[in-house]
Amino acid sequence: MLSTMQDVPLTVTRILQHGSKIHGTSQVTTWTGEAEPHRRSFAEIGERAAQLAHALRDDLGVDGDERVATLMWNNAEHVEAYFAIPSMGAVLHTLNLRLPPEQLAWIVNHAADRVVLVNGSLLPLLAPLLPHLAPIEHVVISGPGDRSLLDGASVQVHEYEELLAGKPTTYAWPELDERQAAAMCYTSGTTGDPKGVVYSHRSIYLHSMQVNMAQSMGLTDQDTSLIVVPQFHVNAWGLPHGVFMTGVNMLMPDRFLQPAPLAEMIEREQPTHAAAVPTIWQGLLGELQQNPRDISCMKQVTIGGSACPPALMEAFDKLGATVCHAWGMTETSPLGTVARPPAHVVGTEEEMAYRLTQGRFPAGVEARLVGPGGEHLPWDGQSAGELEVRGPWIAGSYYGGAAGENFKPEDKFSEDGWLKTGDVGVISADGFLTLTDRAKDVIKSGGEWISSVELENALMSHPEVAEAAVVAVPDKKWGERPLATVVLKEGASTDFVQLKEFLATKIAKWQLPERWSIVEAVPKTSVGKFDKKVIRRQYADGDLDITELA
Ligand code: ADP
Image 1 (cartoon, rainbow, N blue to C red):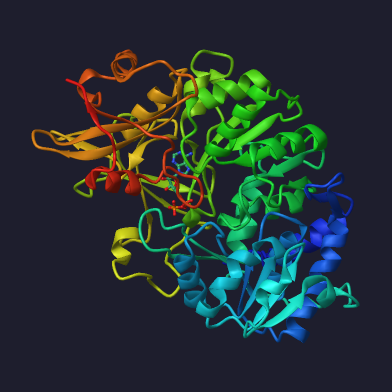
Image 2 (image 1 turned 180 degrees about the vertical axis):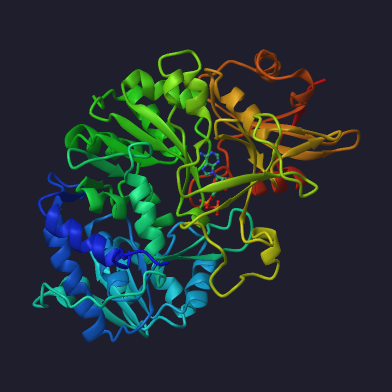
């Protein structure tokens, strides 16, 4: 029999209505680089979201489930777009402004975006691209920037504030089907062509509830969250939606993502929480060493997107901020695991080891490990296999079915509908995931697997190493062997022999790299992850200066 409960659709509209009414005085603060940041209350965000929806519908003719793109930093206007576009029934399409221009153009054409909201500071990026963005008819500009860059463009250009001015501050939001598309984000293409992930209202709503749980980020209206992770990347890890539910104040860095302004922002605005990928925090720690500031306000730092190096976690612990490590993907909304140590290890020597895992699966994310022959592996902390997941905020397909010539759906989704993450790891009996590699980055040496991540972490714990990336390179005898590329800190005096000896104290001897190279910087992807494709290519092209140790 069916239940007797009400069937109220779980929609982004309801998050908007709740946050702007119940938490109307909470604030979105946007950094401007000037003496005072810009502040807007949740109540104002609600009113302006209504005005934006009127403008999009009445002035620009946005109708049905049309895609509306954003090419924006993290700021209050982007939050307004986050709520207005899905709530009116259209689909928010966040564009990754760090993608190579050809990929960006490909994505806009693939999604058929007719309207793009852009920050004025990003017009130098958009203007030369416009001739290649056939579907775009309207460009709506907010914030400072040189408008003349669009002179002569064959699109209609609008000012965001002028569009909103005088529009009603309420909107008769339609009652939507919770399974309807609300937002879309293309994967950043680290492992191939970009693929469009389309989030539903329901998936966003449920994901937000999980983000807000104490076992996840667990923030309240007493908190301020510094959201560094970009709104163009997996909905800023679901934070804007999540914190709108609970009235957490948002501190938005806009385009000021360099270590010095971030440090200043933290000292002046006193956020209690912050979220970003490890490279951002490495930069901030470097800055703090040179120009110390008091960042003790930050009680919790969420780190994900790539593995958190142990040295980074320890450095933050010393500053009084507890790092919470999490794993996820564009396809998983992204919250997939969170590394909160279980009660019985808190305060013991084991605690750190748990915190450094990728974390435990929350309710809503089911997981399994699949071995090379397709067999399901036990959760024993030993058996390594590819991670597959399923759940109400996990993608089951891509927009338009597939993208790119080389894409085969069976590579990403199992026959019974699970997402193949492409991540390789082990799961402990108590449900903690430890990733040892990406399926494509594993080093297969003489029939054994070597984890590139383990070698990188060990190298990066050396006091004179700033960054290290390890990739597989072909080897006549073993098939593949690790190559270590290392960025040394300024004034470092160590050499490869010493580094190898240092590694030998932590890693089995047969896994130690013979090939070494000092590089100025590890190449990064558009979202700041190590780009191992590039390192492998540099090696193959002979562009790296290699030293071989016996
Ligand atoms: P892309 O796949 O385009 O790089 P995503 O942001 O979706 O973009 O990347 C997801 C991948 O990032 C995961 O599959 C995993 O390999 C990696 N990743 C994310 N979080 C972590 C983490 N905490 N530790 C290790 N790897 C991570």
